[in-house]
Image 1 (tube, one colour):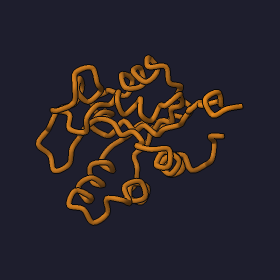
Image 2 (cartoon, rainbow, N blue to C red; image 1 turned 120 degrees about the vertical axis):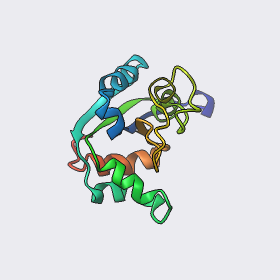
Image 3 (cartoon, helix red, strand yellow; image 1 turned 180 degrees about the vertical axis):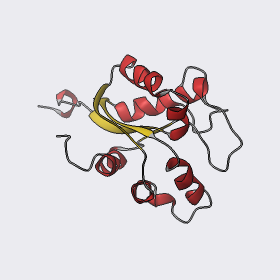
Image 4 (cartoon, helix red, strand yellow; image 1 turned 90 degrees about the vertical axis):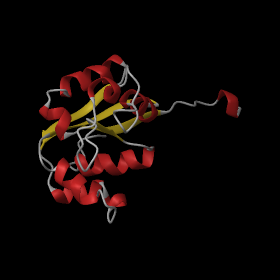
Length: 151
């Protein structure tokens, strides 16, 4: 079989978090609706208040940056919805669905563009997180769903 006819399926898994600002505003259902409307499958779902240990693992690459401590304070300050989604190129697809990190600059039609805004806080409260690569997704899913329930 030539490379051009080889199976090029890129079904992926990604971690999606509805952050405390989104959870507090009752936007979890809307975020999940948009994920499902896009055609992705929700493979795992949990609602929890993350502790700083879990968050330190999740945001390890940002340790030492000025926004690190305010980010941990924000993320540990309320409940979040953690979801594992599955689908063809879902990492890229969800990040497009989420919109730009800055909700003021995020385009209309995206989660952050439609539902987010700048609240003038020390850390950007932008409703959702989505994994940025297959490697990050695997690492993050293991942090948020450590029991190995996903096969």
